[in-house]
Length: 308
Image 1 (cartoon, one colour):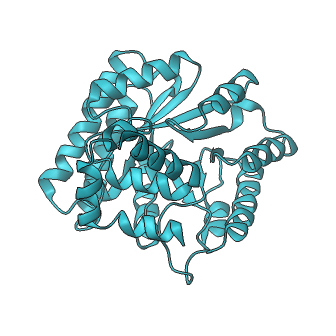
Image 2 (cartoon, one colour):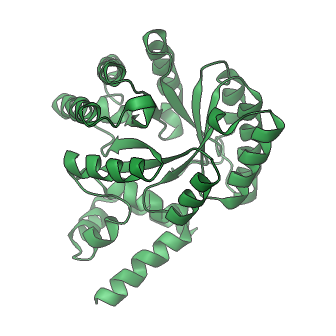
């Protein structure tokens, strides 16, 4: 119930104004978002790559309904990739980018979104790295996978996200587990109806494990996005059962969450990729992080109390 309340708040303009204008908010958000500028993103990337981690970077913004804004987002990704390449951070795909298609026009012009995504993929290929398409609410899944198929014709390493809480995802995992396919599996962070998504934690967890096993037994490259120790342990066990080396999959975690665990996994030879968001439009991302883990909400509320 609390999760649903927080997700509803993430769509409230009134709540957005309250949170964005609270003096403490930006200080707390900095735990999850290293900054708003390209240089903030590059600095965070440099620090994480130096620590042995790979990264994927998200320029925050979604639900764009303006062509100029979509173009500005595309421009920002191209500038970011150029800067990462110049800094030597994209070598061997250590730094890649994650793109929400709704940020480049998907909601009102799929052809435009494909054009912008193609441009971003080309910029990534030019500096020796890749792009992963983030997944959003269930109404965009078919469109996103259709655009993925088109992008892979010229950029076969383009990755995609699948969300375990959707009923359809196990079938999608089977379809997309072929050779060379890069799939990030997450539990899902949007409020979805029971007709399309599992509602209970146990059901979501069971779906995640089924999907994870499908990906590990497939021919693609699984990217296991989870902070749940049970899921991380299952990923390692399923990988071993499938005969995968540590280089044949990776664990992904968010910037600012379970940093010590990320370091521990690296020390054991596991590949870890940290998801770094940056930009001014942090509200929706931040609220979904609060909804995902009660510990995040407690951290935020403690910060509010201590400041007041």
